[in-house]
Image (cartoon, rainbow, N blue to C red):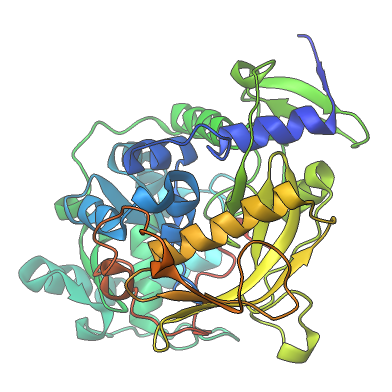
Length: 426
């Protein structure tokens, strides 16, 4: 088979186009999720929940978070292990679920014999939970019995949280599922009431399809990568082999994206965006240094608590340090860190995205506040968004009160227990 020879420019453009971040914007949320394969849930809402930010980055201000709430409520989309996926994709995971109790190390991502043995030791509690959900579900975890005989031991926040940890393993076994979210609570129910009754795809075939879809979403990826218990960053033998000039090793590329014309735009990205999710790939292809710094002391942060990577065309050119102060009604921009000097065209494009972000956050945000030294068309220090007609959008009130993603979480919430899901490395 021919090994495709790509420049970094080629590879970046393939990745950007695959993530639907080029100039041709998609128009439907479901199309976006099907192409990306997932939206990652994270409770931090310094600006907005990550799942909504990712959707806005593709769809623009026409996207309403109410669309995501509706898709989750009618189960067009489903939550599986802190990832929102198309409901039809659940069939690709049911084979793994059916075999979880009898798997061997290396067969399933993140599987450990010690986990299986702990579940078996607490089988009576597992049956108690299934009985309670069968008669009264959906329920939050605090309303489920903890009759575990062997407590869960951990050096982290999950220590002795027996019912919560058992529920996570019961998800892997295909017994329970998240039916909805109410505020910050996940509501649990029997999986048979939540998941579609589609034929189960055999494990080997399901793995092949998942790898193909992941490559289609990423455009270019490594065949092998570190073990990631929820969503891998590698794609096995999907696609065709490629090398990238100036980068060691071989890649797999989605051949349908080769040789396609490219037209880029500016975009502000969630720290959990799949374009930059694999930090090693981000360095290798985009030569972009980035870390999510909300876990660092303020004095040690270089770019800000929840800095948004800035995409311009096929390059990652900087970071936006901003927070949505809903109480004051302000999108507060503390800094725009330029990795490369912005010319006037870049500055206008980035400032346009900042204003579009603020309009999307209405009515909770009514103006943009910038540092006095910040150059660019977004002036003066406080820009009233009603100086010009707002970008049409609808239902944005759900940004603060959405029922499915816990959107009422405070700015600066550090309780994200999904850190590391999908092999995210800050």
